[in-house]
Length: 171
Ligand code: S3P
Image (tube, rainbow, N blue to C red; front, side):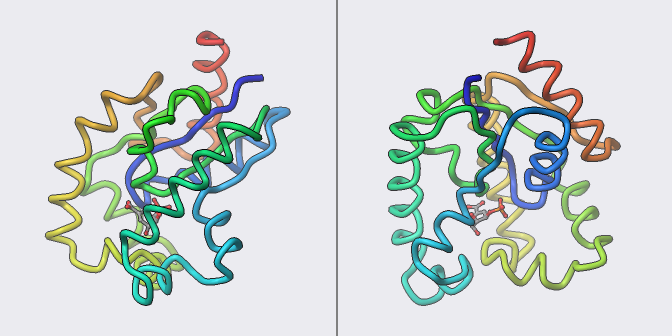
C-alpha cells in the first residue's frame, strides 16, 4: 500500500478522519505533530513560543525526510503547514481535506474541547491572521493535492469512506 498523506488547514479534522480510516482499513497512522512533539519532548505550542516557527518548520523537514526514507503502508496526518515539504509527493498520495474558513472555525468553536483546541494552535490565536493564512494557502493546498475531499457537512466516518474509495481508484 502506498502511504496516504492527509493535508489541510488547522481544525479541518485530519486527526478524526485518520482515526476512522484506521478503523476501516489495514492502514496504521502517524501524525507529524505527534512525531515532532515526541522528538522534542515538548508541545507544538511550546516549540513555537520557546524556539520559534522557523525551528518548528525545520523539524517538519526532518520528519518529511524520515517519512520518505522509512515509512510504508501508513496514513500520515500532518500539521497544516506540512504541505510545503518539497518531497511531499515522494512520501505518498496526497489527500486534501477541504472546507471553508468559516465552517472550520464554526466546527472548532462548537467542539466540547474548543478552548484547548484553539489554545494549542499558535496560528489560530488571531482569527483575522488565520483567515489570511487560509486564503493564502488554499490555492497551494489544491495544487499539491492528488485527491480533494470536501468535508463540509460530512462526519469523519463519511470522509474516511470517501477517502478509501478515492484512494482505491487512484492506486
Ligand atoms: C500549523 C498547524 C498545526 C501545527 C502548527 C502549525 C500550521 O497543526 O502543525 O501549529 O502551520 O497550519 P494542525 O493542522 O493539526 O492544527
